[in-house]
Length: 267
Ligand code: SF4
Image (cartoon, rainbow, N blue to C red; front, side, top):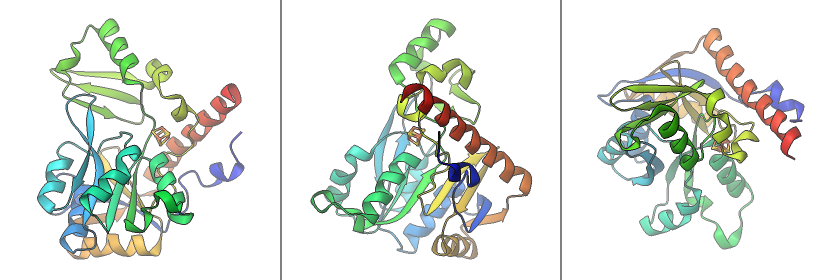
């Protein structure tokens, strides 16, 4: 069973929660917000994972506005990358970084910032932790085999993969939408045990929910920063509304319940 406090605060502690949209000529409120941080010299780089073609992705370091825009091309990707982080930060000599990552990566980095391990510590260089919403990541080989065999799809024709709260969408010549129930078996085992949908250890969580970008500001500092980005004309922020908030909490509760179920089964 999960500790009771997970269900009491399924999306964690926060100061404010907004629906956001870009106000500069850029696709995506998160990308516009990151441009604000770079343009105002509040950070010297963003580390994130970028979608390549289909199911592939790569870690990127963006140090200029153009690089952020180029990297965001489709959308920030749900992809594990923590193993390459230290090397990347040191090689690029970054000292004020924003990291956009998965809730599990952000939890790890928050723990490292809170309890530094001297021999591997680079946490003082991390200024902002931004978590994406995450339902889970999939074992790629198995899911590719499933799609090929069941739907007779040429994997090389898939241009983009989107994760929605209820399904995986494979976008190529046509869109194939596969509900999670069908492919739940291909979720990584760690994901089945993971109760964190929004990234409760982040400074800011950012997720796409019903085609809107949602920002969750988890501290006064983070909230202030979002408001400054708005006042500087980079983003617009709006009240999210109680219906949308309830739906996000419902998704988070479903993930907590899934973790509870698999913890009982697997551990
Ligand atoms: S479901 Fe949890 S463990 Fe899996 S990728 Fe997402 S945050 Fe990480």
